[in-house]
Image (cartoon, rainbow, N blue to C red; front, side, top):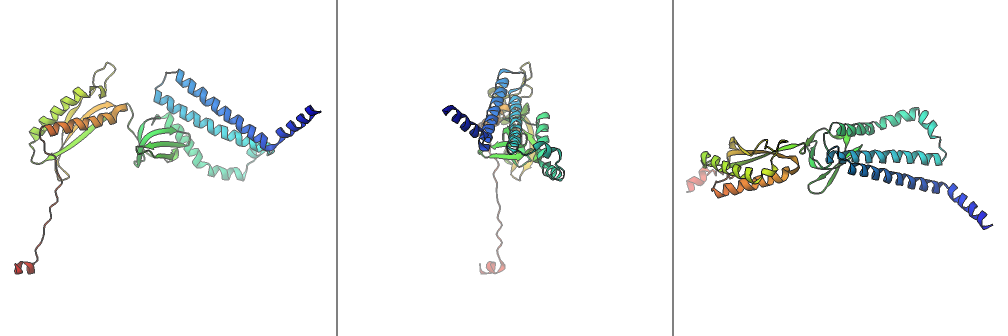
Length: 291
C-alpha cells in the first residue's frame, strides 16, 4: 500500500511542469560543464598551436556551447508547455520576418566574431586598442561580444559587429620608440654621443628583450634613429631611439628603455627642454605720462 502511494506521489511529482523544467535546466547545466571540461582537458594535453590561440578558440567554443545550450533549453521549455515548436519554426510567416529583421544585429555579431577568430586579428591575452577609443587586455572572445580589461581594471564589453578598427600590440614583434627633447642650448654633437652611450647600455642590459631570429641572432638592436624634430613644440631639439623587441615584454622593455636613457642623460648633464611662456605687458599712454 505504501509503495503504491509512493509511486503515485512520484509520478505526480515528475509530471509537474515546474519539476520538468528544473530537471531539464539542471541537465543542460551539467552538459555545459561537461563539454567545457572536455575542451579544457583537450587543449591542456595538446600543443600543436600557440597557447594564446588555444585560449581564444576555447573561449569561442565555450561561448558557442552556451548559446546552443540556451536555445535547446528554450525549445525544451516550450515543449513542456506543449507548444508545437516544429510547426512554429516551419510556419513562422510574418513573425519570422519580423524576428529576422530583429536578429540582423545578432547575425552580424556572430559573423564578426567568427571572422575575428578566422582572420587571427586578436587572441585572448593580447593588448589591443579598439576603435581608437579604449585599450586593454583581451579577456574574452565570444561569438557576440568582445571583452577588454582596461589598465585601471574596468571591463569593457563591445559587440563584435561594432568593432571597426583593432590595433594589436601583440603580433609577434613591437618596436620601442622613445623620443627625448633637449634644450636649444645643448650641443647636438654632445647629445648624440650621450645617446650612443645610452644605446650601448641598452643593447647590453636589455639583450633578452630584443627580437631574435630562429638562430638566436638579434634582428634589430637599439639604435639612435636620429634627430626627429628641429623645433619640437617650440621647446627644443627632439631625438629618437628605437629597438625591436618581443611583443610579450614590450611594456617592460619600454619602461626599462626610458629609465636607462634618463639615467644616461642625467649623468652627462644634458639639459632637457622646458616650456616657457612669455608675457608682454603693455603700458598705457596715460600711465607713462604719470611716470
